[in-house]
Amino acid sequence: MNELYTLQPSQIVLYGVTWCGDCRRARRVLAEMKVSYLDIDIDADQQGEAFVKQINRGSRSVPTIVFPDGSTLTEPDNVTLANKLNTIKQTA
Image 1 (cartoon, rainbow, N blue to C red):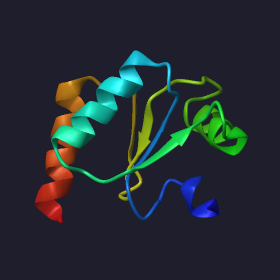
Image 2 (spheres, rainbow, N blue to C red):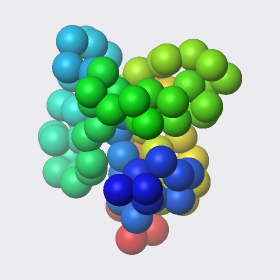
Image 3 (cartoon, rainbow, N blue to C red):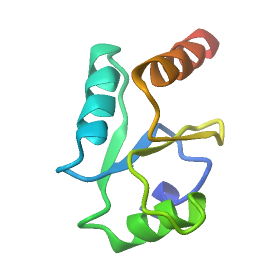
């Protein structure tokens, strides 16, 4: 599980919460594009929450999405997220 709290995960990791509209929207984009990912609920995972705060300079901003290439997106809009996912698909 320690592999989750790194900027170099083996797969996409979405850090979010169940009640967040932006998190649900990001999950929907991932599902529509048929992209597998790990979903970490930071309300239930204190280490995940701490990692999100570390990435976002103390802010508990969700969704925070970490990609295997070391990049992150925080609260991305649909177009930004889809563009990133398309870039990943092209290089895979």
